[in-house]
Structures are given as structure tokens and as C-alpha cells.
Length: 165
Image (cartoon, rainbow, N blue to C red; front, side, top):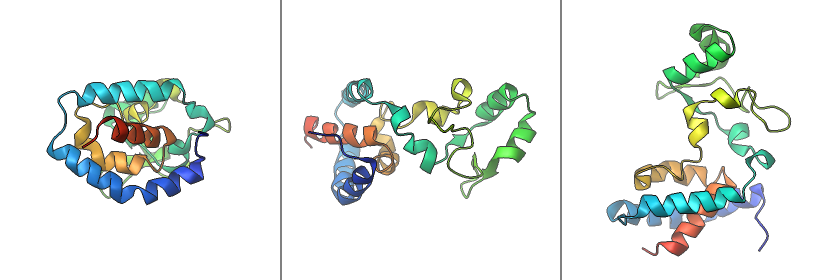
């Protein structure tokens, strides 16, 4: 079966939102003991066949949260003082978190590579968070990410097949 396009993924994610929400609600109530192991396996399998550089939708449509450690590391890399980095690139959102002033990401190049890849924020390194420990605790985030990331969409679809709740 051919892989769905990004536009198809967004529509499918919207169509499956209620189904996925119910699934994750059940998962929160009674997560299998081996859930983290299963998710790691699904994540690894999907990312062996996924080329993020062909998509980069996460970088084009959403901005990561920046921790103080991220800010210090990236500022140093760019030879800026942390406050200069904040002033030039970040804003504080409604949750009082540092986020990019705008999307697409300032550090995304035309070929979908990242100018600061080696020092990128923790949120970028961990995206789409499908291999996170205690996966059932981030179901709201995962519901958002399936509409952004084709790999996250595929992982959740495989998860529903593998873990019948």
C-alpha cells in the first residue's frame, strides 16, 4: 500500500481523531506493562523507513519549546549571549514557555536540513515523542502529532493493530 501524502495524513488524522482519543483514553486506564517496549519497537521500525528530510512538516508548522539549557547551548553555538538569542528568535507563549517567534522554524534550510541540528532543542531531538517512557501519559501530545508527522500517524495505526484494547 502506498504511503499517504502529508495532506492525506492530516485528513486521516482528523477523521480518526475521535477513534484515537477513545483508544488513548482506554490506554491511560489500563496500559500494558510492556507498553514502552512495544512503542520503542514500533518507533524504531517506522524510523528505519522514514526520511524526515523529505517532509520536515514539524519544522514547517510547529515550533518547539526551548528550555534554558537549549537556549544556553544554542546561543553559545551561534556565538550569542542567551538574552540576545531570546531577543532575536524567541517569544514567551500563553503557557509561559519560550517558543519561536514564528514558523516555519528560523533554522530550517531550503533542503529541509537544520542549521543548528547538532545543538537543536530537546523537543526537536525527541519529536514525535513516540518512543518516550510512560507513553500513555503523553496521549494528548500524540493526538496532535499524528496530524503533523506521517511517522507518528503510522506508529499509532500500527499500535492500534498490535495492542487491541
